[in-house]
Image (cartoon, rainbow, N blue to C red; front, side, top):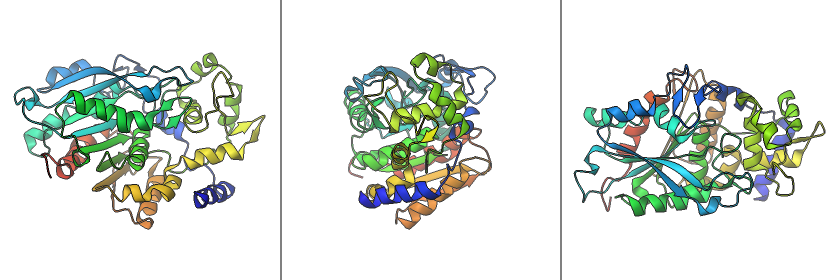
Length: 372
């Protein structure tokens, strides 16, 4: 831990923020989705839920799962979370059959309902017909929060998402569905903030998951640089103020809630890396401590327990360089993995990658029967 802290402090002295994360995510939603309805005005990347369900041979269920670890979060977000569960075509016909499970994590600004259409869960059935994937259960929890995303972290402001995802949700799914309830049959994937969550939850719960696929993951190295946009956020002092912030400028509030919560600083209960126009390096250090390349200093042994890790990013994605840096950091740490790039940007090929890369990856790596 001391080595990790020295790394953080030295990096703070010489690094600037590697990526303007909010600007990258602006293209993902840009306020064009009708939250909770799963439709996107002018955004053909997100398939409407009704259209998706109409074509499915399997079944898509929307359930509520209570997270005890999310109770009492200072933001006031509900501890009862929407979760989408896709059941493959044979699930109803073969009552004695059990299935591997892939947990899928959405990006910043999305609800799970939108993510199901963005990733296009129906692609699994296309893969089944082509023989490139096996039948599996897909699970997507909704991690939308007061500031548009929990970052799948453990925070007094947002709740303990690490325990909710790695323990409570997995336990619920295993007890309510016919799963192969072992780590060899569980995978974890996500895009952008969800790619970050894939690595983070995988680092914290290697006893639960055996395979990871991170798509265009964010937050590899966040130095909390004080920018003009960050300075403007000092004026946000209430939830009402926060609700008026444009989407593309809001993610620092979500990261502060996730990584620098402060129960003694109501009503938003977090500290920004700037106060009275001046940087707060001790807050910036907290953000750095939650960056994946810094966490790797401590959690490389957890990732080495994975059967397979894969990550990809588009050549036109603003997160390209930080993903390349993470690839190099993983290699240096001795973590076996595969890194791929593709022609495309941050959002345009999520559905195609889910169909042609992610689902075949898990079909190859997961155990589809007991004892394998």
